Picture: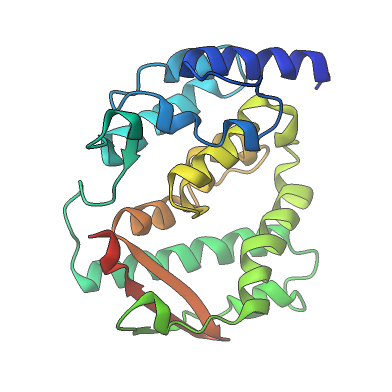
Length: 238
C-alpha cells in the first residue's frame, strides 16, 4: 500500500478518535485508538468503511465493545475493556473451549503442512492435550518453544501455504496493535476480530473464536510440555 495513502488513513482515524498531538504515522502511535472511542462504539463504522472485509471486521468490533467496553471512572481514562461483563462459564465449559481451540489449531496445521506426517506443529497438536488447572497464571510454566510454534510459526505457515491473503495490504491490519493493547496485551482479541482479513482462500470460518471466548472468561492457558496444557483464571481481572 502506498505510504501516502496509509498516512492519510491514519490521519482520518486520528480525527475520528479525537486524538490530539503529533500525527499518527505508525501502529504504535495509535495503540490507544479503541480506548479513545466511546463505550457505545461510535466511530467504528467510519474506521472500517471502504476497506476490504470492513463489514465483517466491523461486526466483530461491535461485539467486542458489547462484550467488554465500559466507561472509566475518570473521564480522562476513556473507554476500558473489562472481562467482567459476560456471564462466567463452568470449569467444564472452559475446558471444552480450550480443547476446541487446540482442535482448530490442529486443523490449521494440517491444512498448512506440506507433509502432515512429519510436520512438527502437527505433531505438537496431534492428540488432545491433558488439561490441568493452576491456582493462578503465575503458576503456569509455559514451554516457550511450543508457544512460539503455535503462536508464531503456525499463523505464518497458514498464511503462506493456505490463506495467501496478504493481510498487510489491508489498512485494517494496522488495527492489530490497538486491539492488542485494549485487550491487555493478549492476541486472542485481534486474532478473532481480524480473522476476515487473514482468512484468504481458507474455508475455515472462525478458528480463533474459542480463544476470544476464553479471553472474555479471564482464562490464560499455555502448553507446559508436549501434550500438556495448564490454565488458570486471572482473578486480578475479576
